[in-house]
Length: 327
Image 1: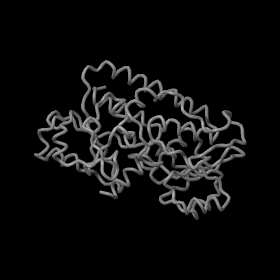
Image 2: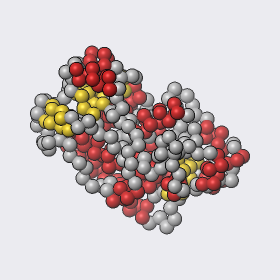
Image 3: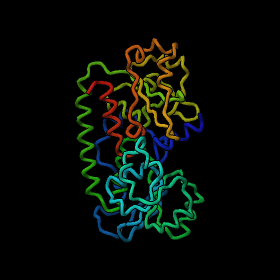
């Protein structure tokens, strides 16, 4: 279970988990202008930024040998940057079952499975994007080698994710492309809010993994459920986890007690194998009286959209809305 949760957190957040953003933020702040991190709003260089460590990072020219070390960063970059400017992405980015940019990675020669200083240094990058959980020893070696490292801020709420795209765009000099994406996302958020506002009865939703863990509203998936017009039964019941408060484990009895109208899940497997747990659930007599099972409302959502920690979260919210309200 601990191994699974570690993998889930790596994929769900890609830059680090456990950033809180409650329902009020979802309803009131999601379309607000995100915080600027550059000391200049133009694409002209040099530029100076304050990264997630509180370290000033100066880029003297537009980076052309960028190394990305998380899936979320891969998805940010490949949405706005020509692949020719990217020296490395993660191996995860090549898997279309979990990555929204897999088709854009073919021309990028280096796919990182494990971040090592030796590998990164060998690429001679002019910008290295790292998460908060990067090995401090690796980061120290990269800095000692005179390379430019930038640690993205630790915020995987919807607002934080959209701010992350704008932050990366400012670094790489592609603000206009990011602005176009963000404008489109804001319009789609507004459209979802308009459509869900007319729903007289909101469906009660449980996100459940194959290892019987779930999420509170203080997660990207929790925010997707809320934006899609659902009620997260975990938050409704006030359930939190012991080791990871926003990722509680559920007993079978608790799932029965919660009795959700709809259960959503994702079936991506790290080793690429075919998941069979949904069929096992459906054949479990202990679960047969739950509304979601009685009414055939157990749905597998596209893992790339549901577990993303980049701006594709809007796709996940739309997928959930379509499951809940039939579009």
